[in-house]
Image (tube, rainbow, N blue to C red):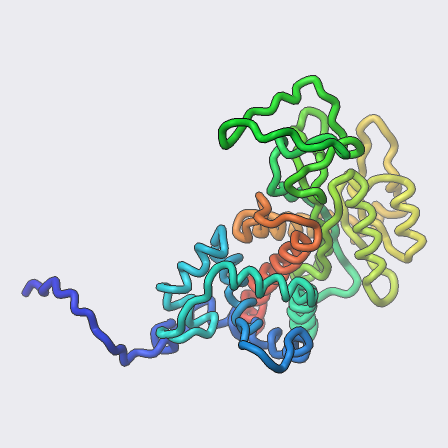
Length: 359
């Protein structure tokens, strides 16, 4: 018997959001990990707000919504609010009932900026890292460090001479700019859209772009990120960030795997003075490598070289799924906040699988 195509407008629903979400849905495990981290951050949230006035968006719901934005590659806060309005799974994860009103996009971004002032992304990242550490999933001796370019939300047209009055607006919404033959450097030019971005190219024959440099320190046991930094894209940030991140690792001697871009004598010497064994890939193209048999003869060296491929998976996820291939935010502090938060979300995704495997 054919069913009737009836479309009744029911006023009430007797099925709760909790019942609608399958028990084996991946977001259930992700929410348990997230809620444990947010519970640890509750005292820090309290210090960001006053005890009077109109209630704002609860920071726990704000962070859960931002986590959904990264997990489902939602390109803007406006689209995120639209999804929250009709997606029951998203409402359940954030903690909204079916009848709760959704926030305005501008209200959402303004409340997110308050979390920026409190450096909540770094605290959230640390809470997730501590969760992995208590589950004995982290190595405290063997690490990998690497960096990548993060394309800034700024065009070449915005890269103009410093201390020069802006040109009068040209007719039309998108006037052409001809800078062919003009020598443009970071010392003489600056982006008017994102002044913190730097013009940089990765090598000869590669296009120059306005960008930041993102850096990750990953432990080698489970492939989890233990530190994340953002520096100006100036060609020196990778080695500087590597020194800072390895310096912050507590304990005794450690090993750090790196690619050929870190094979510089001064850098390798600095790491050895810090009781860090540099498992750097040898760069022997028209030069002599700073890594010799003292390092390569040990069995741990090839293992570090195999393990360092895992950090590329983290960069790939953060750019493809997390939406960092082309930044949507401007300014060094906000880019650092988003990059650190995306690293925390990647750890949550990986932690869900690791905890399920050890259960």
